[in-house]
Amino acid sequence: MYTLLISGLVLFTSAHAASVALTNYIVGSKPALVIVTTDVPAAVKATVARLYPGVKAVKWEKEDGNYEAGLTHNGKELSLVIDAKGNVLETETTITESALPASVREYVAKHHAGKKIKEAAEIVDAKGKKTYEAEVGGKDLIFDEKGQFIK
Image 1: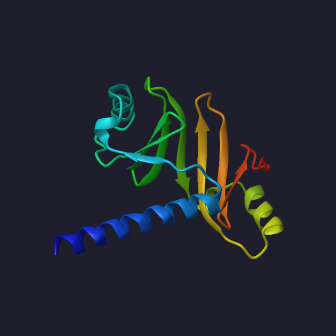
Image 2: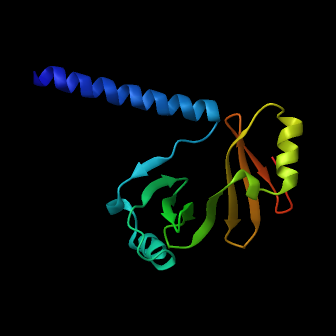
Image 3: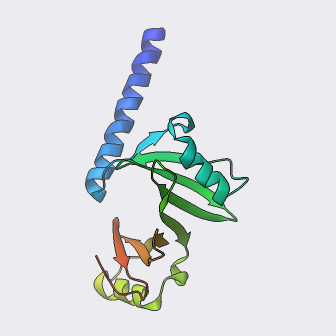
């Protein structure tokens, strides 16, 4: 009985890992490592607590040596990229498609006809520079503060 249970668990875990790897391959992104709170430096956790007091449900990932905190605050989905010393490198806030600059929506309509914007976000880096991200057809398109296509 236990052998069957363990075999099923191994099969499920392997299938999930293959699914994540395939998704990362298709989307072209580097896989992020989901980590538990105990593996997050105190300075990183303190930054999130200071900026978003009272937020308890934080999903942590480690990517490129930094820490990404995914959370919901005041009804908005946010992710923060924070270095090990607790410095915020980037804040990404999910926004509605209508909150994107009109030029972003026009670019998508012209260059990706028939495709919809699946997700939209406003990104602010450590220097206060704002960019926009629109996920279209499984790819993230990046636009500058004025809504002009970057990549």
